[in-house]
Length: 179
Image (cartoon, rainbow, N blue to C red; front, side, top):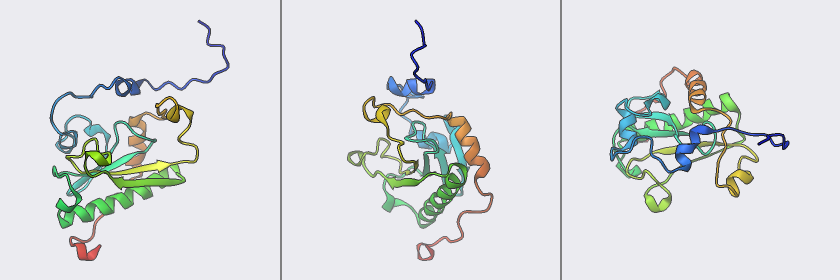
């Protein structure tokens, strides 16, 4: 078979497990609790704070798709402590600044999916998505082929973001009144 068909090819072999519907570690343990404890996929953590961590999405919508996750297994935003709420907010702001510095996106989607019916596939452990967006990032592959192609390996994305993450503390207050 000849590949001389004038088509460019983008090879993304690490996505095959997602296409097949395979879970990276098939057990009933919450993946965010595993990551918080330093287990499977903790190599994708960009930053660890006092009550929360920032991790790359294993199945990102776009390069640099981060999630801000409390260490504690909690499902609803209203169940967060004041310290957790402040750190989720501060880490989300730092994530936006860091992604802007690394890859200059044209916009972002930031948000929570609370409950399975809201689109939360891991709704039992709250996490805030920070998704960088560029004009044209949803093309025919995404729309027709239901496949997202990513130009960068997760490990490379993690290294770029971790290196650019500021070393200074991200929270200065511990009460909601200070937000």
